[in-house]
Image 1 (cartoon, rainbow, N blue to C red):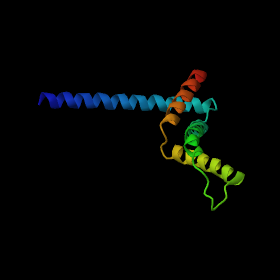
Image 2: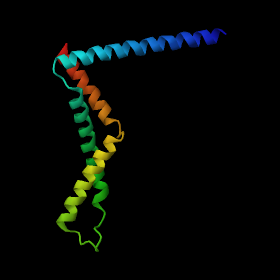
Image 3: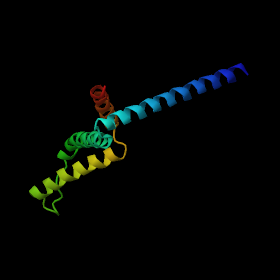
Length: 117
């Protein structure tokens, strides 16, 4: 019985902490919006950064792949492969990515918070 009460008290404390953090985030978002800081732009920039990073990590994986002789290769295929890898990066970043966007977003918000205060 005592462990149940302790567990409930801990859960209540965690809920209160989450509510407090949510309220702080809401207040910060309002302050950032009042200063003209757009969260949509921050999110887009963070996701774009992650997409470029993923694509740059994937490019060496495709360098060793020889073009199919049926299609002939050439400059057109090389350009297409670069564009395809960029799209792979965008797709991976938009579907969860590696978590880099979250870290970049958090850092951008932290820097903007300093500018707001």
